[in-house]
Amino acid sequence: MSLDERPPTSADGPEEPTNRPLPLHMVREWLKRPYARRIVVLTFIITAGWIAATFLVIYFMNMSGGPASSIMSEIQLTMYVLAWVCAPLMGLTCAIIAYSFFGGWGKNRGEKQPTQDGPAIRTNGIAVIGWAVWTSVLAAFLVAWGLIELANIQAFSNGSVAANQQPNSQQSITVNVTGQQWIWTFAYPQHNNVVSDVLVVPIDTPLYFNVTSKDVIHNFWVVEMGVKIDVNPGAITNTGFTPNKLGTYNIRCAELCGLHHAYMETQIRVVTQDQFNGWVRENGGVNLS
Ligand SMILES: [Cu+2]
Image (cartoon, rainbow, N blue to C red; front, side, top):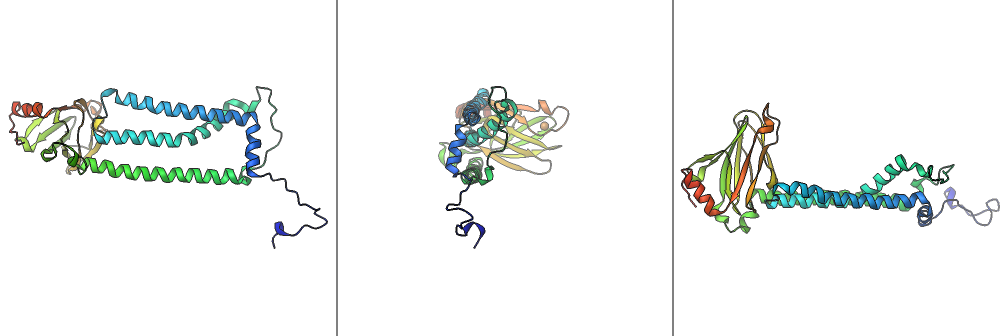
């Protein structure tokens, strides 16, 4: 029999009083304190501000025209979801930190500072279990969402999803991409090896890229398409995407590769199939499609 289970004796009195309040009661008591209410309000404000900020970030990201592929749409959805599900937890943590730093626990508002510690939070079942469950479920969700989205993006970039869904699924185009200090070159083996320093592609057509480098390691980043892959000398890496929006977008090098790395950029022009055929003819290529 443990110490807590022993029957009451005369020495203990008729009821064994405990000074440990019930968890719910503790939470209710806690919420009565002005500083606790302020932390709750601060939590809501920070959470709302964080969610608003995600819209702003994506808005600025999309000022250059994106998202222009399913991959980029999935990436932006993931940015929203990950930011939102974490927002309340981050809001609470930041609220406590901010209040501790700047609020001074009411010392500037005539609020009486506690002279001794309240009950330790580790004795509060609701707080301990709630925190453990909340953060565990959150972490599990983030892992699950990340894995599902990764599989989605890989499917899109290999064309296994996009190819079935696009009207031009029979006409996928392979482009050989070469990076070198500090330019990009695009060759179209299906179109008489037309070579260009700008990537011109028809809309809604699955594109496959064989990517390599002539000198050092670069990184092929098609910004608004959400695709980024290492460009290694002596090896070929593969990626792909299906552009789903007409327009001109950015291609940049995303691997520090020397003096003019910052200027190693070009464009991808997403055009209609007719415009693409015309462009191929103008550049001396045979249009096989
Ligand atoms: Cu570079």
